[in-house]
Image 1 (cartoon, rainbow, N blue to C red):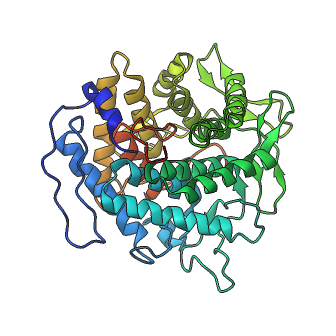
Image 2: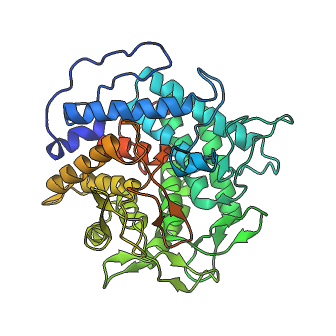
Length: 420
C-alpha cells in the first residue's frame, strides 16, 4: 500500500513536495516519511509523529523480528485499571498503516506484526483458523506455545480485517504465507458465519464460549465484502467474488433510501432490522469499500447527524446514541471518505477535519504529542454497551495515518504488484 492514489487526489491537499527524508537515529526508531507531493509539510511532520507512536507501542515488549503485539490503549483510564490488551482489529490497521507509508523499516514492522498474527492463527487452542478479538502482549506466547488470549471471541468483522492485512502484506511483498493466512481467515468466515436467513449474508461469528453470534451486522458485511473482493483478485478464484457480492447485497439491504443512511444490521433472528443506534462507521465504510455513488449521501448523513464538539475539539461521534463527545477514529473515517469522494466542498471539509485531528494529536487529554486518543474526553457512549476514553489508541492513530495519506484500506492500490 504505497501512495500512488495521492496523484489522483492531489487537489485535496497542498501540493508542496516534502524534502528529503531524514533518518532518525537507530534502526528501532521512526523513519521520516516521504509521502508525496499531495501531503503538506505540516501533515508530513504530523504523520511522522503518528508513526513514532506506533513504533514505540510496538516495541514495548520486543524489537526487531521478535513476535509481539502493541497494547491498543495506553494512558488515562486504561492505565488506572491496568488494561493492556492488543485488539486484532487495531493490529490489522497498524499493519496497513505501515504498508501505506512503506519505508524499509515500515515493511519490516508490518511483516513482524503479520507474522505475530499468523502465529496466533496457527497456534490457537481450537486450531480451526480463527483469530481472537484480543491478545495479551506480555507474554504473547505462553508456556505451552499457545498465544495469550485476551478476549476469546472471534468476530467475523475482525477476521475480515485481519484477512485484509494479510492480503495487503501478500500484495506488497509477494510472500505466499500471507495469502495462505488470508485464505484461512476467509474460509473460517465462510464456514462459521454464512447465513441464509432473510437476505443472505454473514453473521457475527463466535462469542467467547464458541457459541454462534446470530445477528448480521452491516459493518461486518462491509468488511467481508471488501476482503473477499480483494481475495478474489489475489487468488484468482472467482468464488470469492461471488461471496463478496453476497456480503455487499446484504449491506445494500440495510440501506435506508429515505434517510440516506445505513441501519446497523439485523437482530439475532438474522431477519429483523435493528434500527437503533445508527453508527458512523458503516456510513463511511460502505462508500470506501464500494465507491457506489448511491452511498455518497451517507457521508453527508454523518456530517449532518453525528457532528460533535467537546473539550475544544470537533469531529464526529460514534453513533446517534450520543454526540456529546468526539470519536477521533470516526473523524479519520470521515476524512478518508471525503478524500475518496472528492465532491464539491469536500476539500474544505477535509482540511477542517485534518486540522482538528492534528490539534487532538497535539493537545487532547492524555496525548503524548504523537498519538491520536480514542475520545475527546472520557465516557463516550457508543450506544452498543461500550465506552471510549481519552487514551492513546493504536487503532485511531493508524486510521489517522491512513486517512491523512489519502489511503483506502478496503481496496488494493494499482502499485500493489509484488504478488503478480
